Length: 319
Image (tube, rainbow, N blue to C red; front, top):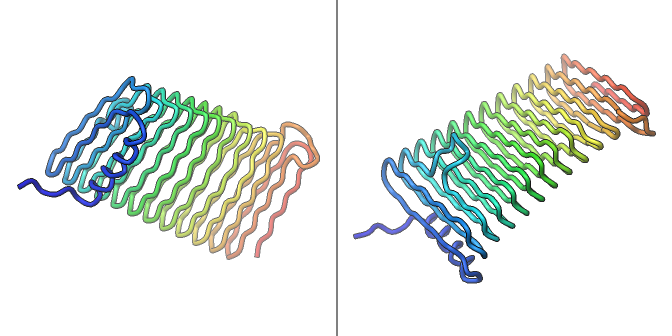
């Protein structure tokens, strides 16, 4: 007797069918259960849309080759490109490439240990990526280029999580990440984009955030870290950039560099052994080129602020 599909499989397939009823689209679905599962899907050249669902339950599951960021499930040249992957077990790997579509969705859910996922989205009007991972030693690599609007959301729960995002040549790029656990790492780089936004949150121990933005019109940061030995680093080259960094816990370190004509940044730290460094370089002297605020509450505090250009305003408050 054929075993029934898991609940997650049924939910994904129902979602896929609902989307298909409204359009003339191509559909592909694969459900695998056991050890050493492999799945590969290629969908190209369909006017309305291509949709794919892959559900794997077991160990050593593979959807494409995540290390290359060029294989996996391939979806090309359709109005709507949608890929949904659900993996449960250990040593799961998933990859997808979406290109030349008006709207693209990449939805991934992995539960277990040593999960790896990679997604590449290119030459599209609108891209949406949503990744949820629960377990240990999780890694996500995301790459988006030549899109008008790019939205990336990742939630990781567990230990030794790594999240790497590289966006370039996009009109609007928005990255939202949420990590909860130990030894978490977030690295996001966005270059040559009109508007770049960062909303990053980490909870736990030994957390690290690195956010880089280059050649942008507007960049905005919102970073929150809560725990022990948190490290946050941001570097920005933009016509206008703002940032708000909050760290709560012990042995926190924050480093920020901004270059542009209109920069503002606020660092707030609460705890002990906190260190904050803020460097601003105003290219054009305006009434309020640089605005910087560092607030620290605790013991053994260290704050450093450097501003160059015109119209500088700086505040350091330690309590």
